Structures are given as structure tokens and as C-alpha cells.
Image (cartoon, rainbow, N blue to C red):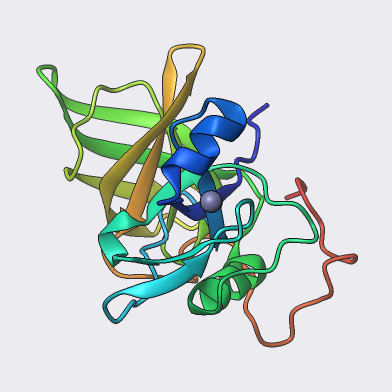
Length: 200
Ligand SMILES: [Zn+2]
């Protein structure tokens, strides 16, 4: 089945010479906090300072320096203060359930399509949807939850790794809608130990 991918926000350490000498890597990624495939960058008010977890040097970074990177963070990881809220939000709201969907839209060069598929790693902001149709970044899709028959608009925001000819497409909901997917609510949520994963 589909692997649940882990994402984090990173910046590239500006102490390039140090990391080049250390590991012959031109860039060292400094993890800032957890995210998911589609969650927007937390609000950042101008430049912010980040201390490198490897060389220990501190530099100023612009919001545009931040990248989304597919990587699991170690359990001991402490998020950057500006990225802490997003991390907590993700942990409480992301669901590992696979959600049945019907997706409609226009494929690149092939006209209208309709595909029965699944979303994985969903949150109130969107999800990763497995699709074989060829799509363009920024285009709009109509998503229908197969169980509830609810329809919503989503926007293609990124392309993940493909699996057996189908791509994992990051789709952001045009309006964040926690009740579109079976995403747990923050109030009255069971502890993570009691949480059922992969059942329906
Ligand atoms: Zn560094």
C-alpha cells in the first residue's frame, strides 16, 4: 500500500564551506518543523534567525529560503519556535486513513477526466491524492468524497513520487474544510495510543 510520507520545512545552511569540507555536500538542510504535503508555510514576518544543527552557526533567512522537504524527523527533534505551531497542528489534525474519492478535472492534452481513487495523508488543508491523469500545477480539481458524496474544489500544489504509473498529487482545498475528510477534531480527541489507524 501507500507509504505515508513525512515532510518538514528546511533551510539550507549558509555556512556552505564548512559543510562542503565536512561531507562534500554543497548544502546542509536544517530542519525547522514538521509539515505535510500541502500545508502552507506558517506566517513569517520577514527575516528570521536559524542556528545550524550541525555546524552551530546562526544566520538570517528569508521566508522564501524555506523549502518543503520529504524527510522523517528524529523523535528528539525540537522545532524552530516559528514553526512549532504548524507542527502541533499537523500532529493533531493529520489522518492516516485512506479516503475513497472521485476526482474530476481537465488533464493536460487529454480533456476532461473522471477518476475513482484514494487520498492519503489528509488534513484540513488538503491531501495527497493518487492520480494517473496528467495534471498541471495550480489547476483546479473537483473532489467528491465517495462515502459522504460531498464535493469540494481543490488546487494542485505539488507532485509527489509516482507509484506504478500513478502520481501522488498534493491537492490543497480551496477552503480549509476539516469535515471533508475524516480528520480528527482537536476537541475531545482520543490519545494517539487509542487512535485507530488504517481501519474504516
Ligand atoms: Zn551549518
